Length: 239
Image 1 (cartoon, rainbow, N blue to C red):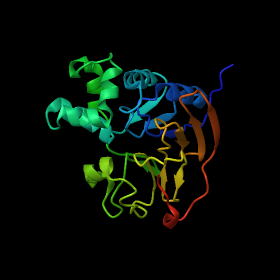
Image 2: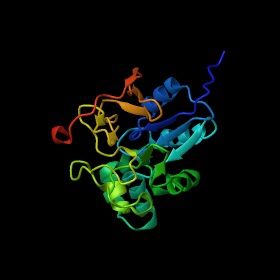
Image 3: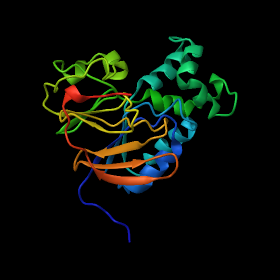
């Protein structure tokens, strides 16, 4: 008998970076229901081996739950390379080569499927609930969420700037700044769940409605627990 939950969940997933096996393991453990919302925090492509299959998996997930995808800097680089705003070779250096190879070894830009490109173009910058907001990388604490600079949202690392609590009073959930030890960063007002899956650690999902955390890796391991305790901003260490 299937387990149908009565309480909808909002679950964020950190930077997948082409790790399709980890994503499949994580999704299987989440037991998603139609009333759940799954928020992909961006950078689902590049660096890892299976970006095409990750996109296919996300497209299929739209039939299982409400899917919200936030555009990361790697999706932006792909689109900029396609649109002539960035040299293709530059994108390839930052993980685009692995993405093209996932469409066939040695493939060029023409191998990118039109449905996949249009899917990436439809992604948003910010998603909000009553208690949390979700962006890819960073934010300006004193500027409303609908007036955030896209460069900060997509490119600003927490290593360069760790923001204060946002004026809206909601907790920020972000990715982008990978923790090279595979650990979640919890500052209370900000939670970063990029736990370096493509580097051999974990792909993390965080349920903002309960504080529950699930993790999976490319080797098929799966584990779950609760959000780690709040740590001081002054104690942040990044690899």
